[in-house]
Length: 465
Image 1 (cartoon, rainbow, N blue to C red):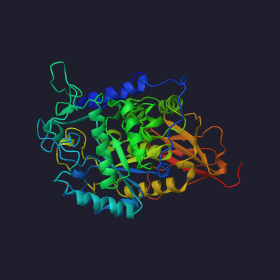
Image 2: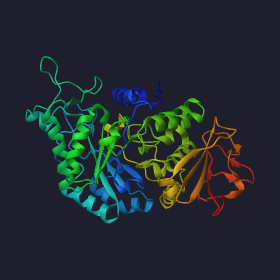
Image 3: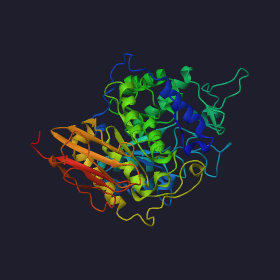
Image 4: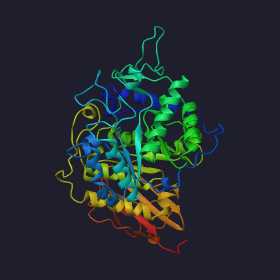
């Protein structure tokens, strides 16, 4: 299956990552292959809203303490899982920019002094837990910096060529050295890193960077070891591989849906491409699989830059109303357009928390997250796609569960459109109002009127068949 990579492919460092993700998607098992059900995952995952934090960019001081001070704001926003991008000291040798890459880890057991101390991390986790929030760390298992502690100690954990020279994981990733998971020493060393932070910092799991470059056999071995002491933690894979969700990971990245969003919003593909992508994924993955849905993250140009403000909001409404688990990347909730992917990832750029022309956006995010969390149809219900006469531009679907039914209609084009989703009687539904949303559609007797990038959520009247 060919995938297009608009916008992102201009960055050479991304090439290996996209190859990994593409190969995972292509080589995954088919619908005819018998696959056991997916892992259930921790109970709290169903209602999770993940918030990705780049500590260097999050506050003016660029520290863990700067994150801790604003945890109350994040709790008020409604997010309940904090994902901290890598907190470890970064490599100086061959670093790609003035600040270095957070994904070139020098010491897995230390906190980068620029971010603070281990005690600062413990305080962050303790406060988050007190607010009812989980914290997961970004684990970088595929490679280390060239001046890593493991290299200084001459640990036999690296991948080498026939002449004994340590290799890059990908030709474009010059600043990092590849780890070799065919070696028991490597597998044991990385498991011990995970056990250390679970024990010492009491974190709630890990987001595993470039997980598809690491053999699934390691992940299954690691999971078995971690389950003995921490059975309720979360493992999130940056991967698109069905077998990863059977015995190792609780959730993975939905890169195919992200690529489809770009095709629709940037290349003029039919909105039906998104539905077809979702359906192919459902057929391919084990029953009960969960995917992290996103329109923005640290690897990508900001959604508000790619799609414009209206388009970015329409895309995020889709993310909040689909099944799976939604992601908010820090600054999305205010419409921040500051570059954070490479090369900005290696620099010291701060989120603009009060951008011009974004009034009420945080309030809208707060309302959408609260609505999602209080409606089980969105967190654990089934999804039923509905046809409509404007399928090149408009998505329409039902979310059903716990005795309730929601109808979602989203215009992914800039053209105003009137739409009557097929198979439902609009008279049986009431429009859910979201304050300060200039792009919200209007429900009529027999259709919904959608402005460009407009959207609407309707709730079925109680007792209607």
